[in-house]
Amino acid sequence: MAENIPMPEGPKRKASKKELSEILELKERINKLESQLKKEGRPEKKEEMVKQEIKTYLKELQQTPAFASPVADRDEAKEVGKLEPDQQVGALISLVFEKGLPEAISVAKNLDNPAILDEFHDTLVDHYYKTLIEKGVL
Image (cartoon, rainbow, N blue to C red; front, top):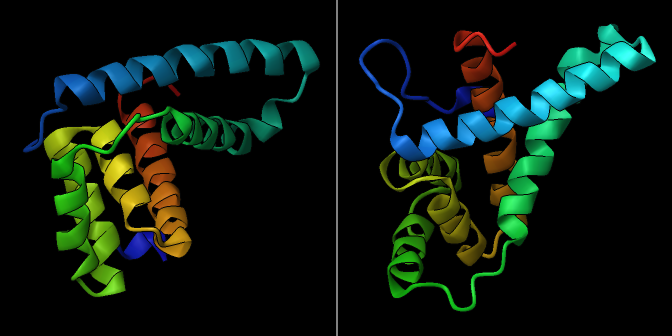
C-alpha cells in the first residue's frame, strides 16, 4: 500500500537541511552495517538489512521522548485526522518535507492510529532507501 503514496522527488525538489542530516545519519549507520555484512560474508541480504536499519532508525526517532507534544503537532494531528485514511499517510509524508521527520512522527503518534503509523513507516523506509541509492550511499 505504501507504493501508492505520492512522493515529492526528482530534480525539482532539493533536500532540506533536516533531511540531509537524516540522510547523513543513515549513511553512517549503513556504512557500519556494510562492514558488518562483509565480515560475516552475507552481502546477499544487503537490501533487507538496510531497510531494517532504516526502520530501526525511524522507531528510535519515534521513541525519543517528547515531554509534551507541542500544540502545533496536536493541531496538525487533528487536521490530518480529518482526512480519509488513505490520504493521512500522504499528508504525513508532505509534513516530513515541510517540517522534518521528528515533527511528522510526532503528528503521526498523536493520530493514535497504529495502522497509519505502520504504513507511514513503510512508506518512509521505501523513500529513504531510494534516496540513499540516488545519493550514491548504496
